[in-house]
Each structure stands twice: as structure tokens, then as C-alpha cells.
Image (cartoon, rainbow, N blue to C red):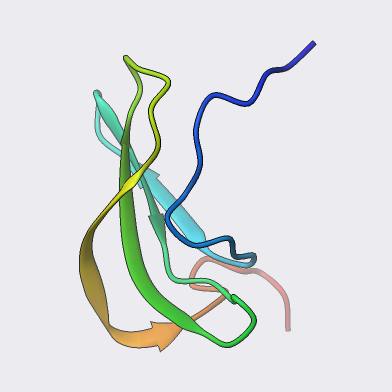
Length: 67
């Protein structure tokens, strides 16, 4: 079973995700228009993400393989 352990600052789909060894990052996406938000969340806690910056351009599907 899964549990809800935190939320992004903006609900969105079609974004990209990257990580370091301690944090995850959710980038861009569609909410419903393209977003420039960069959210950061810690792997060691169940807290919500924080908005730590902006992409230079609002976009979605940054890592997509769709045509």
C-alpha cells in the first residue's frame, strides 16, 4: 500500500524529474498550461516540495519520447 507523503507546489502533469543523492526535483509540466516551476523535495522527510526556481521557459514533456 502507498501513502501520501507530500505535495508539489503546483499540481501538474507531463513534467520532468531529476535527482541528487538527497533530493528530488520536479521540473515544468502542464498545469493546465505549460509551467516554469522547479520544485525540490527531500528524500529523508515526508514534507511538501518547495519552489526553488524557474525554468528559463515554461514547458512540458522535457524528457518525453512521444512524437
